[in-house]
Structure formats: C-alpha cells, structure tokens
Length: 390
Ligand code: NDP
Ligand code: MG
Image (cartoon, rainbow, N blue to C red; front, side, top):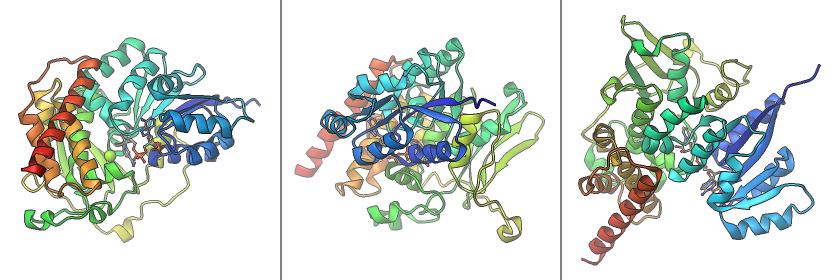
C-alpha cells in the first residue's frame, strides 16, 4: 500500500516549537518536510536539512545563509535569506501545511503569503493573530484555508469545539498557570532577576515566551489570540488560574455546559493535533494520573500585581493598532530585560507608556502594523535613553 505523505514547511524550525514539530515528523514517519527556516542557528539547521531533506532552506541572516550554502553544497537544497527567503519558504509549492513557529511580528507577511498560496496554517506565532487578526481571519475564510492553533490553550478550546456550534459559545475559559511568581507581592517582584524569570514551573519554552509567562503578558496575548480564532469579544474570554496546567482551557456554552481538555503539559500534543486534524494519532509520553494528582485548584488572576494582563484587555478592547503597540512594547522591554538593562517591573511600565502615547489606527494594513511596531520601538528607545542620561 502506498503511504500518502503529508507535506509541511516549518518557519522557525530550530526553536522550541520547531524542534518539537520535527520530533513528531520523526516519530510518525508519514510527513515530508518541504521547507525549513531559521534565524541564524545554521549548525542545527544543517543537521535538520541533512535529516529531513527539504527543497528550500531559509536563514534570515544573509551571511549565515551564505555559510550554510557552502556547507550543504553536496545537497540539492535551495538556500534563501531575508524576508524574501522566508516568504519563499512559506509558499513552497508542495507544502499543504505551514507551521509558523518564528518569534515576533516577522511572522505576519509569510503567514499571509502562505494563506494566499492556499496553505493551511498550523499557527504557533501568536503575534500574527494579535496584531493582524482582522486581516488573517477574513483571508482564511476567503481562501478556504484552515488556521489550526498550536498554542496549547487554543488547541484545547479548538478540541472542545469539535462538533459544536461556535455561535453557542457563551464564554471561553482560558487557563493560566500564573507563572513562577504567582502570589508574590509587588515589592518581591521588584527584585526579580533574569534567571528567576526563565524558570517556568510546568512548561519548557523559548526564552521570550517564558518571560511573557512570568509577567502574564503571554496570557494577555493569548486572550487576544482567542478572540480572533474563535470569533468572540474580549469580555467573553475569561482567564482562570490553574497552577498545575492540567486543564489546558475550557469552553462554556449557552446552556451552561463546560467542556474542558486535560492532559500533561506537553506541546507535542497540540502540535500533532494541528498537523493531523481531525485525526488523532498515538503520542508516546506521560499520561495524567488522577490518583497522584489528587486535586485541581483554581484562582482568580491577579490584575494588580500583573498589570500586563490588564493592559492586554485594554489593548484588545481598543483594537486597531493598539494590540501591535502592546506587543511591540513588550518585545522591546523583554529584550531589554534579558540584556539586564531594565528591571523586571519596568516591562509592564514600558507597555503602559507606549500605549498611552499611541493614537489608534482603525483596521491597520500590514504596512501600518509594521510601521506602528517600529514607532513603538523608537519611542521606547528615545525615552529610555533620555531616562538613563537624566
Ligand atoms: P524560540 O525562540 O524557541 O524559537 C524561535 C524560532 O524562530 C527559531 O527557530 C529561530 O531561529 C526562528 N527565528 C527567529 N527569528 C527569525 C527570523 N527573523 N527569520 C526566521 N526564523 C527566525 O521560540 P518558541 O518556539 O518558543 O516560540 C515560537 C512561537 O510560538 C512564538 O510566537 C511563541 O509565542 C509561540 N508559542 C510557543 C510555545 C512554546 O511552548 N514554546 C507555546 C505556544 C506558543 P534561530 O534558532 O536561528 O534563532
Ligand atoms: Mg499557551
């Protein structure tokens, strides 16, 4: 019997989601990788290319792309770079699904181009929906392509909606672990160092999203992501803290029924579900053990000490270009924090400042979104430089 190969391209293949996607490809054996893209890690990318033999490989950094080309001269792989290259990887002709696992708003354009080329999107890159959901969702309907959520909470909601009428969602209950600093006072949060913030209690993820989980900004981005994916308004998305990450999210329907998806915290499940939807495949790994788990506890989110979440609701309700400002300011602040140039609590302060300074553009185009991103970086850079001198 002939095995029908599924064909996928992965943008961000060397990262946390990217490498776990390739683990699934390796385990399942019926997926062919058509394109791989990374930022600069050509050592790992070369290994991946030799193992999975894509027809296109993209390295954002052009010098690194040149180096990679030399290293794999023995293979028939087209090496490309920059935004043009990333787009070429996204539209590789044989791919059916494009896994968008790059960090940041760099994901918007290639995602749009992949959709225009008729590809389904396995979407990890939440920034794309947060900032351009008003463009992405109508385009998906127009092109008849699927947006399959990879983010664990959104995958959970997606699974809860199987066979249901989306119009009968009353509320989305987005669960949150609360991060490593749940329950801390503002005074205690002042002293947080990079190493503390990089230690997540349940999930192992890329650096940026680990910091975002500790500030609750990740949850804020996820509220906005959910609003677009499931076509609800911001107030219908309620954050529920469930520290052990056993429930990955829930949906409350009009009749009061609540559906939940539970499991061990392992990103491979949502990734694999997105790749094979609506089919389920065997996935090796730990299973939930209800006898050792004993109980599941719930808490309200702490909007006071974690203003990142409050600001996300504000940004999402304002809409237009405001979520872009929220996201860009956070990206800037997190990178400053990781480089030890600002204190932990300044992350949320920078987001708030940038939002206060912004005049919202309704229905921004991709160009306007990217321009807003740049303006937000510029604003914070100037203000911050001023502060350091003054
Ligand atoms: P990582 O930082 O681990 O990986 C990012 C990937 O993107 C790497 O492959 C990196 O390449 C690549 N990359 C960075 N910049 C570029 C660029 N300009 N062009 C091409 N590739 C680039 O991030 P994660 O895997 O943690 O996260 C990816 C996305 O998924 C984010 O949007 C995140 O919010 C989302 N997500 C992640 C989850 C997780 O568990 N990690 C859970 C839910 C969502 P290089 O290695 O060369 O730098
Ligand atoms: Mg998540």
